[in-house]
Amino acid sequence: MKKMKLISNTVILLLLPFCKIQAQEGQVTVHAVDENGMAVSNAQAVAQFQNALKPGEGWGTGRPTEVRGTTDTSGFCILAGNGTDGSVSIGILKEGYYYGNAELLFTNGDRILNHWLPWNPMVEVIIQKKGIQVPMYARRVNEIKMPIEGNAAGFDLMAGDWVAPYGKGEQSDFLFKFDSKPETKAPPREFPPYDVTWIVGFQNDGDGIQPAAPLPHGFRVARQAPADGYEPELAKHSYKEPGQPAHVDFLDGQSYFFRVRTKKDAQGKINSALYGKISGDFRMGITGTLTFTYYLNPESNSRNMEFDPKQNLSKNLKSMEGVNVP
Image 1: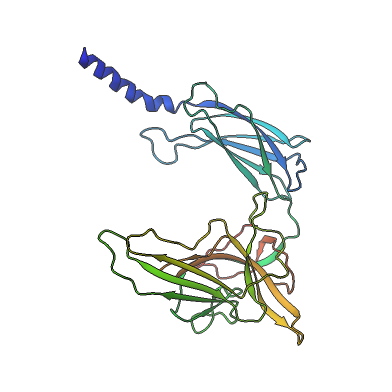
Image 2: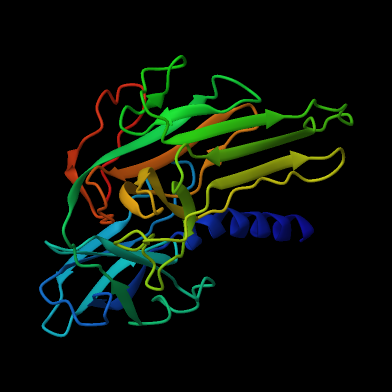
């Protein structure tokens, strides 16, 4: 009898994974609105009901079940589909608007019913209307190495390179400085301690940088850079002490506005300047590597931050990945 019970339990355990991946129907009502809360009609709504990987199958087998529809005059669209992973991704697309998306996790992971709960919840997706998009110098600088330690090196945003003698740049828009204290001995099987400081500085009086406040409707930064509030320096300090967790000076979702090439008159009033934005935080490595994505508007005194991806002014993007996002 004991042997039979053991066999039965084994069979049940083997069957559980297959029961768990059975598809269930889900339904959502999507409501598309703009940043002012006004309904967006005739937009394409896409729901992707996620599917878990099946036992024994490799990457690529868990493709979502995609369902499409069109929003009505009030911005609503009902989408229903089957999925196995307990979540649905929703996207809204319309000409003249930036892409908007949302994520919903269903609550009945135990699958007591044959459909996902909540059933037919209303999910609001905000899409931002495009304004005047302009040509910009847009570039993702990906893990470039600081050419010198302990002293500042200039970076030319138009050239996308270090200023001579370290590169082909001609004007120092940003001045990057990297300092690293000597490592101390690490306890066995522990990552070595470190203490590094990064400083982003500027060349001209009036140049500077400031954090961009996150927008309430989820978009990264405002359409227009501020006229003032720029600080002449941004410092980042990352360290790890023996036996302690690492402190990394990086904020997920943080972005920045900056002002460079500022020229003032005799009274200290700004005659001309160039404005731009950093999309996401600077990723400054402990070994002197640097990653950041920037947009520079080349029109003097224009604070418009809406980039036209069809008019990227950055050239020679073979070694540094170009960016084509608004």
